[in-house]
Image 1 (cartoon, rainbow, N blue to C red):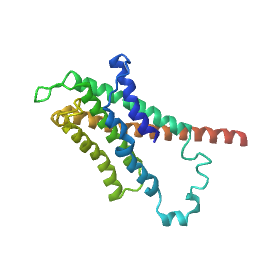
Image 2 (image 1 turned 45 degrees about the horizontal axis):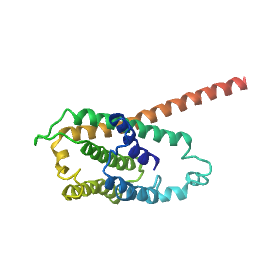
Image 3 (image 1 turned 180 degrees about the vertical axis):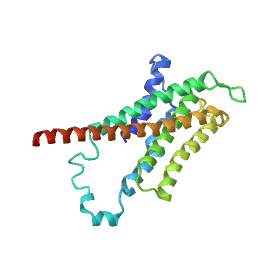
Image 4 (image 1 turned 90 degrees about the vertical axis):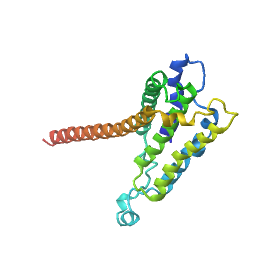
Length: 230
């Protein structure tokens, strides 16, 4: 929840570096308003209700696996977990905005001879945010089903349907006729691949560092315990 909202908001802040912090919005307002309503809500609801870390029979057979008082004891959510996802979202947003600006703003002209406006760049960043958030939910899920994968995929695809509708509406001139720009822009797909790979790399590095620190702390505690016994 914190990750998806920070990842959504921070590109607006980093965009301020390019516009002199004038307050200019990076996103089209209709897209901005329906972010939580249409594109990222249902996968999280499904994850919260139906995702199972252990099968029901295994939970019933092993009382130690029961999450009793897990919320009160902060066993799964604490300050370190909160700040981990906040910092990850901030850094991903920074990487995303500068990569899009560097790869697409000045250095690419599509086959129709068009360069992207900042509205198109903002929509591309918005698209990346929606895909990354749904990808994160899929990565964090312990039990994948046809329904969960379908919901996550459809939530991302719903953005493209929404954008296509805006592309056809005359009273949203900033996006009118821009939908097919991204499909004619190869760097769009290269940037998307780089973002998802970076997202996975963040998890790998964090989990590796966490395991290493835990092993070091465990050895230190074992060493101090042996010293006390002696």
